Image 1: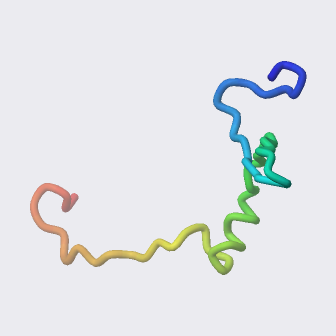
Image 2 (image 1 turned 135 degrees about the vertical axis):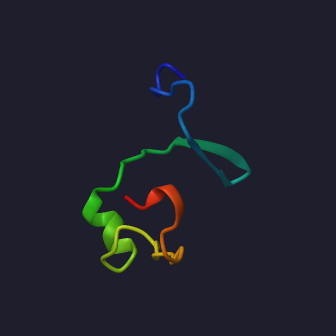
Length: 61
């Protein structure tokens, strides 16, 4: 594992090829804010506003 640079908590991909099990280290890269927004059609998330009604009680300042 040291030769391959595999550490605890690394993600491995498993493939079967010609009757052999092949493990490959999965590389991970965080997506940029622009890439995340593009995945949701230009929005930062699938969020919608919720109407809680008129304020009442102590939240009215």
